[in-house]
Image: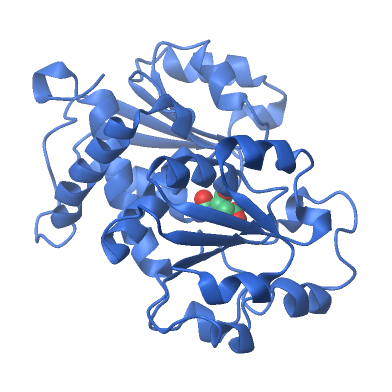
Length: 312
Ligand code: NCD
């Protein structure tokens, strides 16, 4: 495996292998000295053309804990703001001898396009509304740690599906691991063509969150992505919350042990109430620490090389 552009790039065995490596990496987080020598001498560039808190910082920490040299390039502050093309920017950075390029970009397909221009291994850290494979891996890893196995477990994904790359990657990862998935959204935020996709990929769709939640083994709430909305997808924020938010009342529809996930950043009071975000069954912060372990595992497998047991 040279790049990680999509969950589809991975076989089920490779997903499970990444989870095993992530479990080892997870232990590093509780050590006093959080450093492994695996990527000594390798250089990783985080190139983020969209805002990010957890994805960018976890890729940076992951690279550093594996002893890689890590630098960050963002659109603001790079020559992109002077009119340089994406191709020229990545070729310039890669001409410095970069081994790994972690890319977030607002255009769907950007990571695939960049992977065809450069020799470095490219990790897709989110491309438009298309995919976010490390988020899906960390979500499935977090749920698997909590639930034991995902086989036959009912995972309910609720929110702005139209604009969500997290949902698109999660469908592939969760169904691959045997989960039964139901996705819920208002009709205006249900992607067009989902009927054919759900039939071929084997997941369910619903507009009725109250009917689905009592049967959930896990719930994943998605952010309302206002920055990607060009029109009015729902009348008011209040109406969205009443129809689709994980409110205090809806929390009562879930069993007390049913895990609640959210990839963050959360719009508290819109798609998720504080009672749910901060509930004992919320895995939101566990997702963040698992994300670090998963990103360490991904960088390790892509960049460590065969001599260190990597898949690269
Ligand atoms: C997600 C993203 O950027 O796609 N967040 C993340 O990576 N933690 C989801 C979102 O922005 O809502």
